[in-house]
Image 1 (cartoon, rainbow, N blue to C red):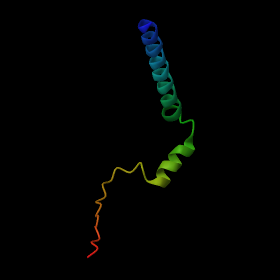
Image 2 (tube, rainbow, N blue to C red):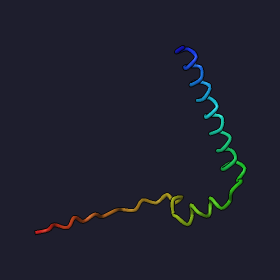
Image 3 (cartoon, rainbow, N blue to C red):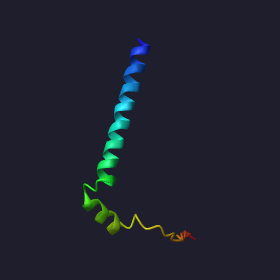
Image 4 (cartoon, rainbow, N blue to C red):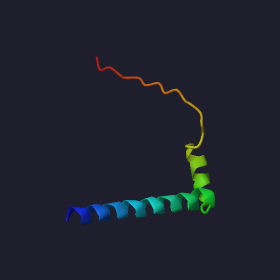
Length: 61
């Protein structure tokens, strides 16, 4: 019984990996959805800049 469960899990992992590769090729390689690039530029997640974050903690004295 454990062997069949292991085989099913291995097959499921392989199928998931194949779909991951296909989706990456579709999204990035073929440029299927150019709106995604516009969204990432709008959100600012594709910039390779480092911004220093200053946190201040207010003390209630």
